[in-house]
Length: 217
Image (tube, rainbow, N blue to C red):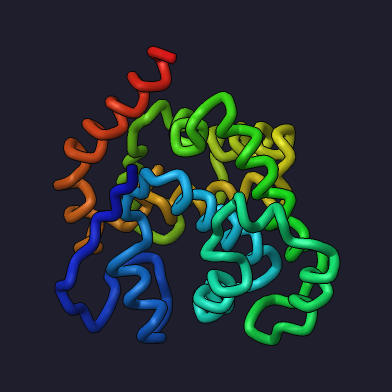
């Protein structure tokens, strides 16, 4: 089950905490960032990509996203865990991704952790439980109001590391939570803030069903 709220409304500028004029970055802000995602595979892919961002800008990873999808079997965990050291060596020569061996290996390691989690609990429920299956609305008015970490992201990071994930520190987890709509950190003056808010009841209805499905098992 997945849900991504998107809009085709064109905007030349963002009225948000984002300082960019890059067309790809602006489109990402307007159409994807902060739009709730409920699908397990989509969440896994985004978590891995956010981990690749460590020490870099998100724009760097955004521009390489299609290359990552190609290199890592469209982020299919069952296929990723079959990757060998030979595959890792080949990826170290792939100019389309970040050629950092630890980061490459982390995606393979994360895929195994994902599969292990899925034996006991759907991965989407595993992640959304950290916000109690709701969207956290922070009502940020200025850039300085936007956090870089939270109690929830710290707990998520600690739990994911214990489960076998890597490159999932509290700051990375918070950026992930912002990106997949667990947290609405668009500034209140940003059109996206109202758009996401208008769909919040619908999204949280789906999250309630997800929560109930886990509680029953």
